[in-house]
Each structure stands twice: as C-alpha cells, then as structure tokens.
Length: 129
Length: 129
DNA sequence: GATAATCTTTCCAGTAACTGGAAGGTCAAG
DNA sequence: CTTGACCTTCCAGTTACTGGAAAGATTATC
Image 1: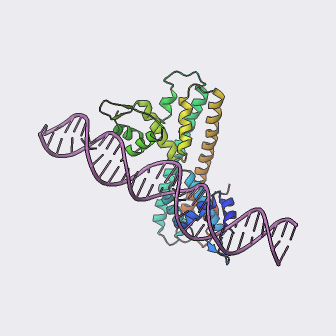
Image 2: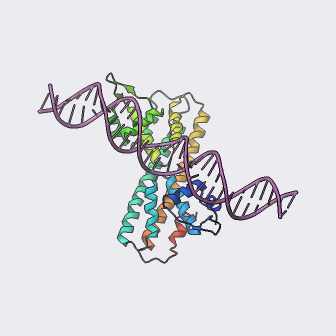
C-alpha cells in the first residue's frame, strides 16, 4: 500500500512516516515506480509508533520496543526484562494521568471564578502523592 | 528559592526551567544578586509541567492548562469546557496506555524466542480496539 | 490521447523543545 | 582569600518533526 494509505491507517502524517524510515525505524518495500509499499505489519508498527510517541515515549524507546518484537533470536530473559521495565513505566504514567485528572476535576468542581488568591488547586496541581 | 533547589523539587533540569521562563511559562522573582527566586507556587507549576510534558502534552497545551488556573477572571464556562476537553484526552491516553500494557503482557506471555514469523503480537501491537 | 488533479519522490530549510558548553559573576567554607 | 559549588547570559547543537519547492507517476476528465 502507498504512503497516503499507510498515513491514514496509522494516524501519522506521510512526512513523519518518511522521517521514521530515514532514522531506520522501518524499511518498507518499493514498488516498480519507486513508491514506498507498506505491508500490514508496517502499518502496525506505524500505529504503534503513533501511540507510544503520543504517550511520552521517546523515539529511542520506541525503537527498543519495536526491536523487542522483531528480534526473535533474542534471549527470552532480555525480552522479558525489557518489556517488564516498560510495563512499570506505563503503570507510573497511568497513575500520573489519574492525578492530573483529579487536579482538573478539582478545578472544575471548586474554582468557578471566585477562588481566593491561594486556591487549594495550586497545592494539588503538582500531584502531591 | 534558587534554581537548583527548584530543579530538585520539580524534577526538571535547570536548563529546562530557564527555557520555560524564556518562552513565558513563568516569571520568577529575582534576588538582589540577580539569581532567580522561585516561590512554592512556581515549583508547583514546574512540577505540573514536568508531569504533563512527560505524558505527551505539548508545551502549548501546558501553557493553556497553566493559564486555566491562573486566569481567575475567566468565565466559568470557558474554564470548565477547557478542563473538560483535557479530561477526555486524559481518558483516551489512559486507555491507550492500558492497550500498550496488554500488548507488552502478551509479548511476555507468548513470545519467548520461539514465535513463528507472523507472531500474533504483530496484530495486537497496534491496539486493535 | 491530451490534460489536469492528485498522488508520489528527494532535498533542503525551518520549527519546537530542549541540551551542552563557554565565559564570567556570587557565595559559603576553610 | 582562595577553592568549589553555585548562579548568570549567550550561542551553538540535537531531537523530532514540519513545510515547501521541483519534478516524476498515476488517475480522472474531456
């Protein structure tokens, strides 16, 4: 499939997809006309990149995560410990998102334009867990 | 408090804190010696920035969220709808993180170095919800 | 079959959000 | 009063895109 189609399915702009190829995150086939030809598996990788980038993982982290399910010859222990550490990171991110959510909920519930100078939200907004 | 202290408490490097000042996210006082002097409220903002940046919100989104609890004169409806839309974004992010988590769990459970070329993880990694 | 619209290609420059390093001023300890 | 750990500004470099030009390929319309 062409890049436009891959872009639509992955949610990433074509520009970004080409950039990801430049930095070696994937290597799609080329059609006879020179156009990039993306497989279903390529699209899965792109979609994966789209998500994890949007959730605060760096490109290098994404590269590792992609390698994780591509390097089939890797030792099981390696793979597991890598995935495990990312799982912990994700746990932490979910907790932080919940705290952010609480903060915004407090904001909605308690501050309707009439709050005092030292609104308690200020104490909460930094996530005092 | 000096920038080093603010850096420690917020989890942001001093460089980044100065950069955030450059782009107008906060304006700490200055001591007589010219050193930046951060208030507790400044540190809350920095901590807030540290978190939301790490969770995939852009600097401009963070600027809006900061404005949201600083602009005390704003119409309540404005504030609420803004916070509300961010809440929805956060909901979506939490769901995406859970899906990422599932993907990694499957990876750990099913792929210990002996998977076939078309590992089912590939289907899952893109989050087919 | 010409032509126009809509792809696609590469390349190069610009932006966003930092990050590192130099050159120099300030401060607290010994 | 000097040493070391701070702090300052400024300028250059990096990461991760993003926009635009110039040109070739494909598809739609006349």
